[in-house]
Length: 362
Image (cartoon, rainbow, N blue to C red; front, side):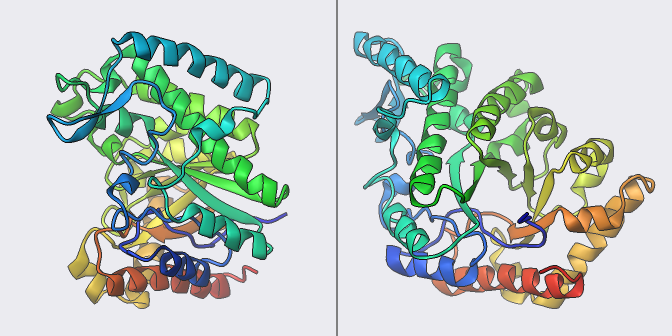
């Protein structure tokens, strides 16, 4: 059985303005877990807060504020909402995919997915990675005309959660059409989760985030996906373990030892087969990326593993952590130069290959 042990992939965004060049880089550096890139440099609609709006009821462009907003009050919204819930019911519960293409991600919202799927079709891949914005991040980024976040509207929070589920299922089904045996790894990008508990979200309950995530996670698992959540800052990692995620992906360059405070939760997570995706290559700190090398990154990873074992008071075996680890950059690379983005992708690939040799992983 194929495992993810010490493999490599990346988060999503790249700075390329040529989609083919971006996809070629990905398939060169990530031969075991390729992914499709978000390319906001090609079109602003590929920004992750906009990229998933196709087919989602109530979202419209506000000319006055030059941004997309949600409108959950219009008659048109309630008509769309009824149809949306019927689609969700038939797709998720009846596995009738007749209307799934209504929730596709096409141009101008993605220039690279067709190129990505074409490459998948020409190869023999065991894994492929897709991604959606996380429901908490989307719910706190998308606002109505008065500036109120969608997260605080219970009906619209449900729309976003179910809508993102359909976006992920569409990706899974595209891959299955090419290769029924391929295993989809679906990441949810939740950068705002690092602010949970701060004054900005003092009224948000941990259980609300768990409920949103777990609803999506359970459906995607039922459709055969491995589900991960990416958060590029410190966070309450018990939210992810409580939501039933398969993969925790975090910024292991800047916060390598942040998992230690949740050793008991992570122990249970690993014992159940969960993976840690170490975002060991810096992408948010350009100066750090310019200076770093494979020796520093390997030392940082090994030190973080040792610290984690120590904080678990010996309850977590080092071999188990290694077995259930793989690597990514710390975050997306869309804000980097082409040269630095290529360096980041190369370093992720190099640390994966080097540690697979060290630990005897095929």
